[in-house]
Length: 113
Length: 111
Image (cartoon, rainbow over all chains, first blue to last red; front, side, top):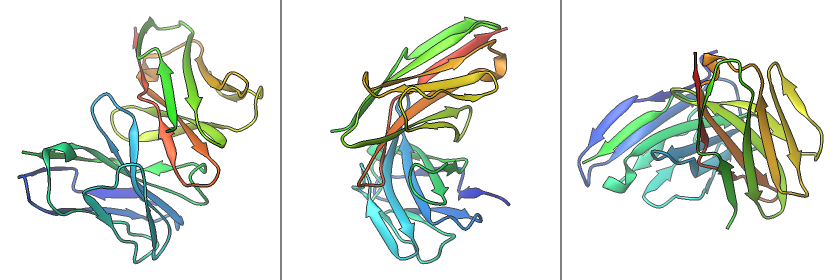
């Protein structure tokens, strides 16, 4: 099992550009999450999904969109990048719910200039 | 708004020392408290605590929840350089699928 994989590992965007962060898990987990982690801060939940076709907002959803067309994939879309979105983005998955063990991907470091 | 506060923010000790990390929470309709270890990259799960007073143990690490004091501690005995990491705690509540994370404690073990 590869677990949770994320691409790209690093990315630099200009203000106003768009991009999609990819996340895939091969553990057949129902729940998937996107977090951001700013320097010296804890993780903040952006969006989550409880199964294919079902997504919901987390704590900091503004400026982001998600979709969940399959159990395996949970891409995160940034439409108009802003400097405030400079962060490290983690995707995670769990089998049952948010208190189940969450398995994290390696993260994507995004810089918006 | 739910809040999780960790202390100290950073800690530097010598190898072999015992450390105690603290986590206090204000979480509406509290369900569980989770501890994660974050080394260079992604957090890895350590413990989930739901019941007060019951210690969870994994090797040299142990943790306990005090629901009366709305707090939890993470103990690491006989520390090793491999324990150097950021330790995160997070609270969950019934009714939504959200974890509230603290900012973490950065632990550095000096050989």
